[in-house]
Image 1 (cartoon, rainbow, N blue to C red):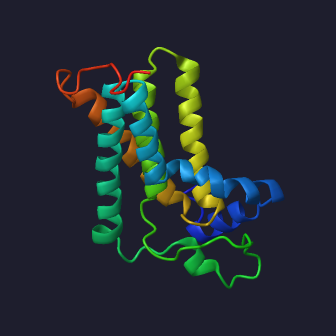
Image 2 (tube, one colour; image 1 turned 30 degrees about the horizontal axis):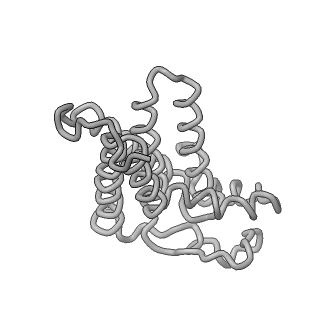
Length: 189
């Protein structure tokens, strides 16, 4: 689709999928890719469940966020979000009381965060295929929410997903096992 259609047409097609249910739920689903959500999940896991996993999630979030935000501001500062181009388009559906952004579109930071977290968690869940699939589906849902909410184009989400998976894989594969090796939580209940 990315090679056969321009990004504005793809965005208008996604925007045309609007329903009352999706308008109500997507603003909440998108927060699963927010940095505060990632930090909260990582800290809860670190404190109460698994010290190494929580630490890897924090490091994975920090690294992927730095790369995504650096790309947005240093490499692609002129990349505008869909709302910049479509705010006056007659068929563009706006969600009431939703805050739309216009700048720093490429890559999607929320999608980067969601895929980095999903990759680290999925690696930890090996060999549970259904858990890994559920994590991938949640990350994809966050990516879809970014296009549904017209916060990013599909190409931004695709780049964010590839960046997030790459960061997550590099972390779990190359992080030395003896660093942060304790599995016990910091707080025992």
